[in-house]
Image 1 (tube, rainbow, N blue to C red):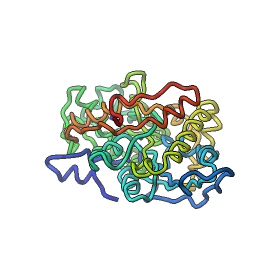
Image 2 (cartoon, rainbow, N blue to C red):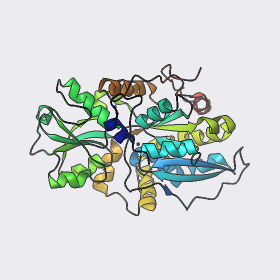
Image 3 (cartoon, rainbow, N blue to C red):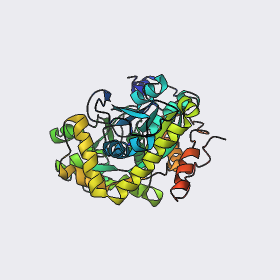
Image 4 (tube, rainbow, N blue to C red):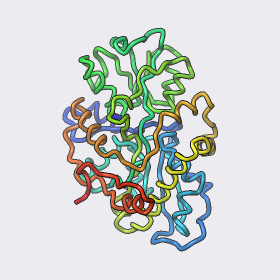
Length: 369
């Protein structure tokens, strides 16, 4: 299910037999291309680790607030000591995976679908998931004048971010569980699934070209601010209302050569999540300040506040839900059954969690042996 250059979604449309999931991002960022943060804080005082610099990638989204706040507050840099943190922001999962494979970034915050895709496409050689970051933050928002109940969704036009992306798979699975039929490639059937970029979905809603959308935050709250109504929060479909929306990944090469740097970034992530959960209002403002610095525009309170409340920040990668999301993609005909064994390496995360007195994370038998 449901937080993603080479457009893998086009490959989905063109291919008759799909070897891998063509996925985009978990939650599309706003803008058009990767952006480097030129205002990187100077390296903190302290001993330099095994690398002079670590290159971090993430999206300009609230579902990536661990990275936003961790950088804004200097919490990640503090753990790195004399090793400098440099960041690049992305608007799509495929482009971030390409950057990781090319060595343009070393570590990234990214959604489950591009993580699965990057791992399977490389035959298990490109990346590892090393930690969790966020859960939730995905909703079905509809025009209340046209759709009053879940059954009313039948026959309507509902947007998802991209063919085969995390939210698209989630919506297709929900449709199937309702007993309705939709062709996963064309989106035609008992429901019209309209693949629309998150940044233009609110305009499509206002124009009446869609009746609703299954989308991540802050797009969902943007639709609500335009008069939409939340008909379903995806978290209610998952055990304990938790499912992975953002992972932390690392290139296997960087992990092998610089485990001390990776551990420091994970310490920064864990400390950032702890600060976010202990100081939600300050953290919300910090994330919005970083978004404004990156995009030139802060989110309005009527969008920021409900969006923030729907996201849980967690160190747990929620590995079992990653496998479930992959299974749903297979069921929808968007993925041949993948071998995800070895996609996780939680050894450094669990070392950090143990030092913080927190319980260990589990890899659902998908970890390195």
